Length: 543
Ligand code: NOJ
Image 1 (cartoon, rainbow, N blue to C red):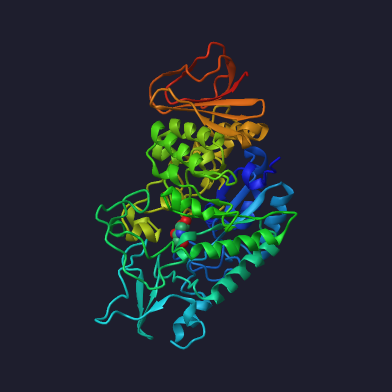
Image 2: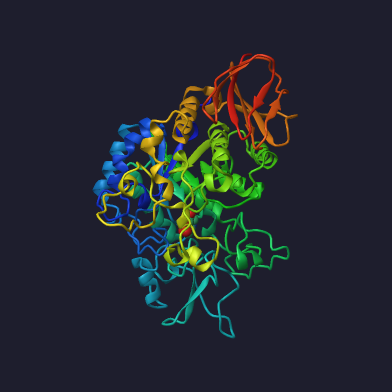
């Protein structure tokens, strides 16, 4: 009998701390705010783990992904006592806590970097990636920053360039130096000792680059590096500036550290890996023979493929066929870098997406606010804060990071700030789209998420059963079966705005237990299932 772990059977919920709940009245969320909302997460919604985006001390050039101290809490979010309380309170409610760990780069205000840049001879010089200008002057090679422009910044004082794969305020740490591994692994132990259950590893594949710093070749096709066009960054094949094979050794050691930490309460890791070649991506699981790596490398494929039944089905089938039997799948539909589901597909299809996410085989990660159907907030250019959007048009991420909508009152219940001016504006729909109103409404998005999570919890087939795709269904529908022991569920999703008939799924009788519209439970008695426009259903099958 395989024993399943919490990170396989549970549902993960991502919290962007700045936007979850503000208890100090400054218009920015904090750790105490998260503590106050744990009952909502545990009881109303029913999730099993939270992943917190960075709360570390930081100058906030990239809203916390520029870390100034890996072992502390930014005063804006609280302090280490608050963090300890958060862990205790979460664990009391059976909620695991996953924190963000940012190994590729620190802030340029981190004491390590300040020392490193102070002189060529400084003992920490080699803690970051420094290189001489080319003979004629200029950056050491053609590498580009994800956030626009060259990935190199000249340090006038010492005459060398340092590498920054993201902002120039985020210098890349040199993982080829064993000292970096040592000190960064110490930061992991620091949080493990505080009771953290897992780590989400920021841009995990970036940490190892070509040791010879070779130029990236041009990309003749201009193929997409991410899932959307990315201007100049797409002009190269990013062969040398990330994902060097040596990265796997680091994550094997990282995994040993986690696995060796506690037999009683196993810890987990989930890697942020934007790789869309299945064979390269799957390597980040490692292997039992060579050594395991991530418990879960985030699977971003469903962010990349168009929202069409055929494309989604293909992505799921490919994942199922590429994974070795011992590796566990996972799915992500949104996060603090992506547009919200309701804005990407419309509210009706966002409900279909909720069914998909919570009935596929694999760990689902829900981004805060998706459970009430929050939408992107268009922010006028002059008010935008995200440096990515300011440097690369179209990539602004403020729109999906707006404050959580708790009720229809002042500041949507997110903050008691006496004056206007939350850190980002609220969505205008908050009087209607909010936790309090939706909690009382039997047809709401919140009710849909809650019922899906409950159903998943109560069903072995949905939690850990096999996945089987049903062929011979209309092109714009995705239909599959989840089964374990005697239990079978049929999931039928209609991606089209028209009615569709599903009559070829191989069983005669069953019962619809949930519709995305939450308005019907009915018997299936003739091997046929009629789907209304944009409807998804979950049915239990009599076998
Ligand atoms: C990925 C994170 O998700 C994103 O928000 C951040 O800006 C970059 N990594 C750089 O750390």
